[in-house]
Image 1 (cartoon, rainbow over the protein chains, first blue to last red):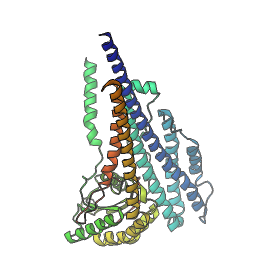
Image 2 (cartoon, chains in turn green, red; image 1 turned 180 degrees about the vertical axis):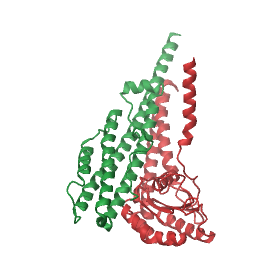
Image 3 (tube, rainbow over the protein chains, first blue to last red; image 1 turned 90 degrees about the vertical axis):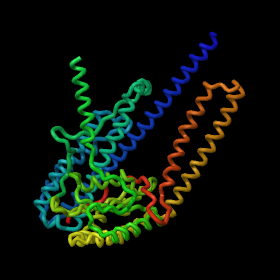
Image 4 (cartoon, each protein chain N blue to C red; image 1 turned 180 degrees about the horizontal axis):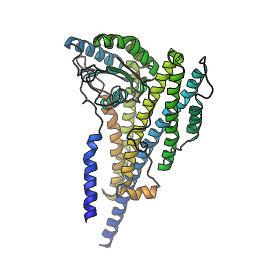
Length: 197
Length: 260
């Protein structure tokens, strides 16, 4: 009789361990997906950061170039590229900080492009500038896509993480809630660069 | 009690409001040419469909054409990217799909718009600026004249050779074979492991059940992994008659669009 109870307890513990392992593995999978999505987000933002020097060079080549036209863009770019977030620590604060720097650059770029279009009509009519504009626009589309995808992935991760009794395993395994990209205050839309001049 | 009721009410309201936020996307069909604006004649639709099915059969690249009278308030690039990913245009592993989305001119929405959107795998072959050139030089003109067939076939004349250069049928086959081999190996390893463990358990306990659970857990999860691959290999259409179905490709938002 005693033996039977021991076997039952051992079996129950074994089942708990097996369940714990499967939840842990599920969380690891989700975590990896989030990291992958973050990698894509970083890629597309880097793509934009790489295009800006090209834009600056093109504008500087204009005949009537005035110094200081793109200072704001250059500064915002420097700030944005200096904010790096470790994919292993995508906490709400870190993601928010990253987003703030990048959204600043989006705003600066938007204003900068407007100034360029106003001041240098001959330049904006050239094929080279128009191609650059298409590339920038494509990059903004990619940013929107990857941000949305990252948010989706994080939503899946956070849901799995916070659900009872998964949260017990998450606590033991040291999994933490991750941050989202959010729309800026007072608007439903993310900050965008307008290209319809 | 009152507070609980209020919380529940708010919860119910937010759950109800969720579907309203869902972004518009046309329901997937099993065709590569979908003209919701009746801009093409039946013969033209058939001719384009056959051309694109043949291109899919010979190269595994999938090009989806959609003509819609309205974007339902979405931005054209965003909508095209969403359609590409949710319909699964292109093969899953190669991500070699292209979406050509045309918003036709209507009385209510007089702006025409055309977008050319490559999947992740074709962004190198069809960079944004190149897409823009294809649109400006080959599509805007005939689209403004109302000749949608000419616009689409002229664009395909350029897109098809470029995509063929990027991913041929052989590339697709090679990848498929490698994955089939990988799946088969995984299956053999799991079978052998399960057999060994089961026979050990049987020897020790004469069929104890609590220990037998462990190998089964591993076995079933890996089996599902393998099943995923067999599913994707079946999606590539070999039938000569019709289109075999979309392959599960994904899109990153690249490409370009132009108004007409």
